[in-house]
Length: 452
Image 1 (cartoon, rainbow, N blue to C red):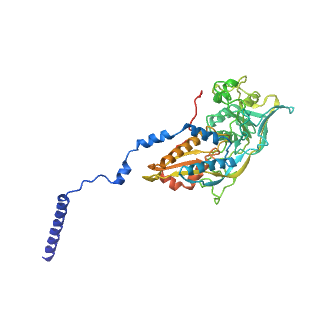
Image 2: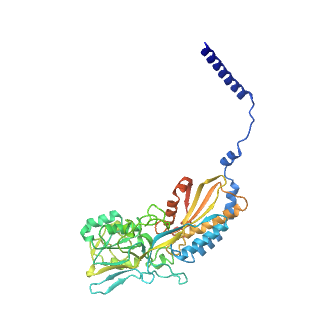
Image 3: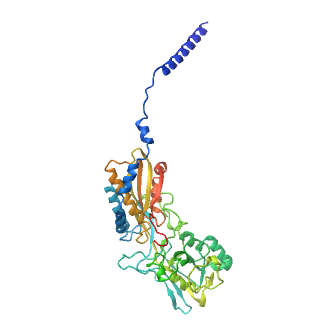
């Protein structure tokens, strides 16, 4: 009896409480309020006035001045001129009101000997030199500062020679397989292989030649790909922008990304480093780029059957052949004086903190280093980026704040294998992975067509 009484009393009280809450909920009038300030800030549309203001403040003459200043000197990664460029950007961004850091990484880089140019030499059976490549490019403007001699970064120092020379088209894996099927795998052993630039990364060309048994490699820019309107003086630099016969393409042959000695980890001073000889991404055979004017002479000494039509370039007065033993018992030599050095490289990071979503990053980045003066790649991008930060800095002085945090990055040592950016990401991968929502790369901000 008592249990039933208590249960009934409890149930009645519970029902009464529910009725009371319902009456209170519907009886008390709700105050009509607008959305919260925080909600309004999070959902508001972009202010068109800010966009118009930004566009009106951009000055083309400033971009031009930036470009002239930054290309007045070579700035290859690891050299004092590259650090000077980093310091210029650092000071400019501080002046624009950005929070600036300049992280340093100690990395493995590669340089030629400017006193001993790398050369390719074709010699007759009696020892007479048929052609020896210059190892330097023709200077069209003597007032310009000297740039680094043509070389393939990370290819080893050494001298190799052979009486066998083969032509392997673009050096793709399928090209080497086809060449081996025509001349035989055994014939490629101990040979030197010449390939034209294009279609794939230059480092893969060297690795493929190495894999098929070559002791050395030669790369050149065929006019078919780099002087499409002909190689006469009126159709190439300095009358047009296409490559002249003396031009040779510098570049890295490293097939990895980031510092070769600290794979997957940032190359800070305290980091463990693997041995140079253990990296599978570094080539083991000497290799050298040459101009197509020099390649023309060398290719005339190729023997063997003529290549398929899609292997032919547009060098004049020769027949493209697969090669084999050189004509008239000649020999070919590749001699390089490259060296590996551990050097410091610097990234410059400038941050303008966002007002509403400061933990979401919009990143605008560009590398800073170049093999020569780098007027298009990368300095057209850097010159533009400096004008962007100048305008944003001016707007911020008048109260402008970006919705999200803007992060401007000037990367070091990109040309050698995306090293500066990779090392930075490896060091801050957790934070960057959680916060970056977009990345805009501007290493070539502007380039013309065939006529501009």
